[in-house]
Image 1 (cartoon, one colour):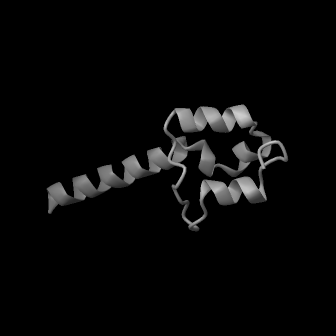
Image 2: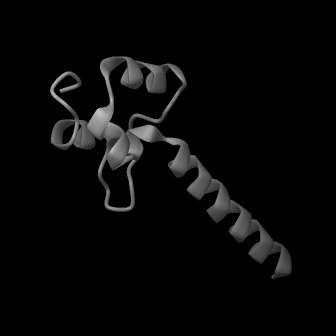
Length: 71
C-alpha cells in the first residue's frame, strides 16, 4: 500500500508539472501570444491535443482568447 501511495503521489505531481509547462493551456499566455510563440510551442513538442481540467483544448483557447494575429 505504501508503494502504491508513493507511486500515485509521484504520478499526480508529474501530471501537474506537465500541464503547467504547456503554455497552450494557459489563458494568460494566449492573451499576448504571437504566431511565433505558437510555432515555438509546437516545435518544442507541446501537446496540441491536451485538455485542461474543464476539457478545453489549446485550439479552443486560441479561438476564444487568442489575439487576431493568432486566430
